[in-house]
Image 1 (spheres, helix red, strand yellow):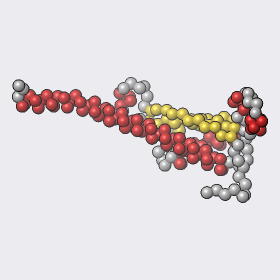
Image 2 (spheres, one colour; image 1 turned 60 degrees about the horizontal axis):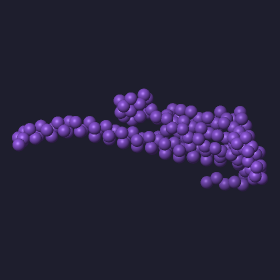
Image 3 (tube, one colour; image 1 turned 90 degrees about the horizontal axis):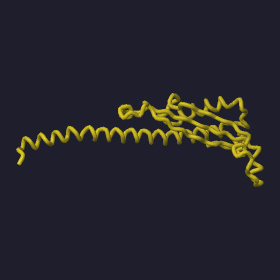
Image 4 (cartoon, one colour; image 1 turned 45 degrees about the vertical axis):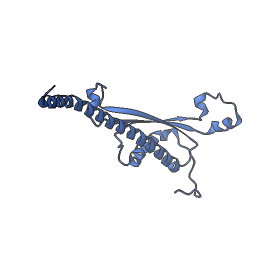
Length: 169
């Protein structure tokens, strides 16, 4: 039968081996929470920024305005994310203009309602978020980076023109 002192020593050794594993597990949950929060906040910020873009855009957007749209989206996402994402976290914003949604399908649709949509321009907005990890654990595990990336893609079509009788809330 082990002595009382030996039992305390065994307990101390078990704690010394178990605590780093518990701490690493807690750090992994913190990182997963940060990733989940960033993905959710980025999605919400992109939705709000595209809503603002729809209400602020007057008439049809010319291809020369694509750079302006990218800047407005980047600034809008940073503004509506409650300072969780700043403009440096938004790694890339790409706006591609198409003549219609059918341009992606190469005109394969044959319905009458689809034929009416061929004159409405469409935009594909791609946003990539790059956010640094909170803890050094991913570097220690050999993931090869200090940040994670997430990409969002949104399609916009039929940007309405603002008229005097439209009310904004």
